[in-house]
Image (cartoon, rainbow, N blue to C red; front, top):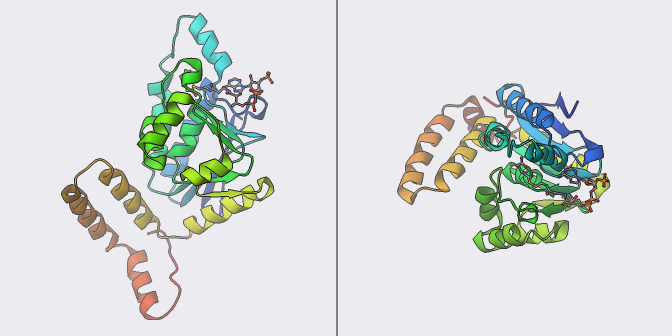
Length: 259
Ligand code: T3D
């Protein structure tokens, strides 16, 4: 299996599983990853998602051996950007539930883009990010031109994408590229702790928050205000909101059921 899928405590864990090839993405793996992401998005019992890599890498991006074979066979990109990368990134970014990347090692090219599309990145202290695209004469894909500048600002994103220099975990933390760096042996538990916390939260309010942020990113204040009003009208009707308001007034901790 090139991608493992497991659900526990309402957290779906998606593990990229080609450790011998640094979890670089073949056609089969991209197909499996897209299926796993869609499965997590569609399963109402899943309330948070964790994405990680098996072995020493998070993901080294496109498998360049397969890519070289495609070039030799005259296939070029073989349609993979539109057929695979774009839907994987869209499914993660628009999923109505939080997605945490546990970046266990190097994340390069589309592998870095994959981490950037998630809502949170928790990194091992040995993790690295490499915008490897220009290093092989390609431009960014898998949303990096959109996500990276929103994470680190346009000047830094430009520098990272044009130069392709490797950014280590401490620098990634300084840049705001990751929210936390932990010792490698603490990564799985730290990322899981965050995912479980999110899985116990107000899922519909999280979905509305993601929708509001995405909408506001490219709209005027007036448009963002109107969209917030619409989303708040949806949130106010949820059972979680009603129960949490009562819990607050009763000086109790809210218990969210995700509805
Ligand atoms: O169809 C399309 O191509 C369009 C889509 C493009 C999206 C993209 O993702 S483009 C970017 C593709 N990725 C890269 O260019 C990254 C290439 N890899 C690296 O720059 C480095 O390997 C890393 C920074 C990821 C890790 O460096 P390091 O020093 O820790 O490891 P290494 O020695 O370079 O690599 C270890 C092995 O993994 C090595 O194999 P070997 O010699 O032990 O048999 C290396 O060839 C292999 N490997 C690493 N990345 C890839 C890979 N094999 C295939 N594809 C890879 N992407």
